[in-house]
Amino acid sequence: APKGEQVLVLGLHACGGLTDVILEMARRSRAAFLCCGCCFVKNQALRSQAYGPDLQSTVLNDPTEEYEGVFMKLAQIGELTDPHEESQEQQRLAAHTLAALRLERFLNSQTQTPQPPNTVETQPPSPGGWRVGILSFDLALSHRNLVLAGIPA
Image 1 (cartoon, rainbow, N blue to C red):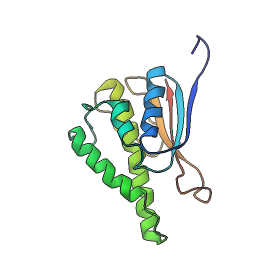
Image 2 (image 1 turned 180 degrees about the vertical axis):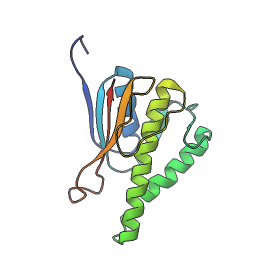
Image 3 (image 1 turned 90 degrees about the vertical axis):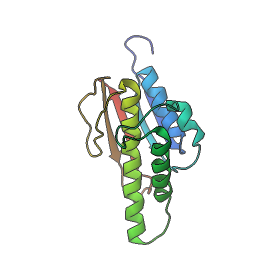
């Protein structure tokens, strides 16, 4: 963006790996972002394109292959549509965990040093200079109600 102008990368209904592409685009351009994903298992090839195959997870302390395996298991739980209350709670917990993992990876893709995710409120700026958090809106509007938010510090 030209000097003095502010940019916002906005993703609505960002299916699966498209969320990761949006986050990476925001990181590379140092633009604020808001991204509301929907499904979790679609467009998985975009995930490795966004972050590269060698990035490791500091949350799970596992190689990317294992990280992606855990991510996909959580994604499958996040896709549950069972109307039972217990299943809905599992879906919400999985979705929130996936959001936290995405933000953890977002922060680590710029610093390559561990940055603990904060899944409830925004966290102080990381060494790479970002404030990130998970926002939500009323479940009555959508069960995919989490919004990943970030602003360069």
